[in-house]
Length: 181
Image (cartoon, rainbow, N blue to C red; front, side, top):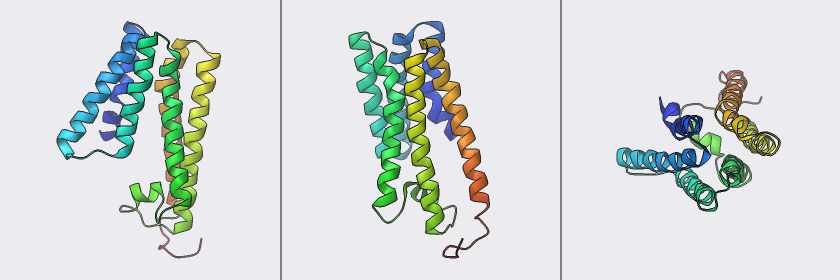
């Protein structure tokens, strides 16, 4: 259910685009992201830095799209968000006590540091590749194709990557932390 909640602004963007245009869809994406962040704040009284960064990016890139009436800006947003995620994962790969993926999953799964680092690097590379894929689709295909890719392609690639990561993780769950791999 949480994953569906995370994707609501994208789903609303997609549906609005299909019935109206990219500018109406962009406005809906901005408003629904504000609403999403508001609901999270209301329920938890806290916001993650990445939630605030994502909100700022949609406001900036969506705002530029609406003000300049140029859809290029909103099309850049997924690349910027994915590359920001990549940067965070890479930063924690080399600096800090725990990687980003270990910070997110470490309380549920016990793994050796070497495996956490591999998983973290895998996510960093995935986010970089997803940003590149978005650039490719936005550059070489029409807006209809890009909107479909944004929802179905990116979501499908993310689900596939999660399945692959889960299969990789399953190989290491029987091992105790600190055991050699």
